[in-house]
Amino acid sequence: MTGIDEFVTKGDLFVQKVQTIGRVINLKLSVPGLIKVYDIAGRQVYQAHAAELHYKPTSAGKYHIMVGEEKFRVVVVK
Image 1 (cartoon, rainbow, N blue to C red):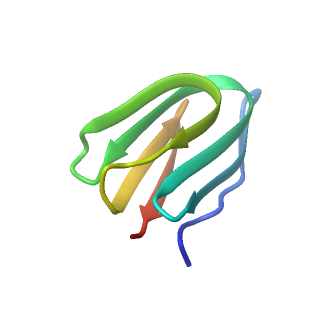
Image 2: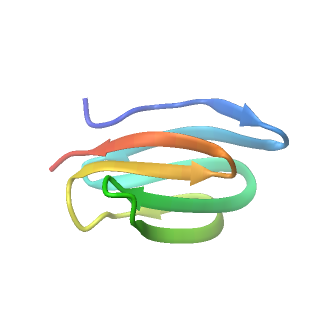
């Protein structure tokens, strides 16, 4: 398993899918929202207002993605 798939609703923001393909994190939103990506140490490594996230972390490991107030844990493998 290369990652996790999650589905959640939060107000008018709908997260359709969070997944990893190889070492790339992909996330699709139904409407644009603020996306923040943190590494396992809690450092923010990425932020964007987007309807779709296509982020390639510099290393494998566990990342947390904040979409609004919702948190997702994503495992990125080599």
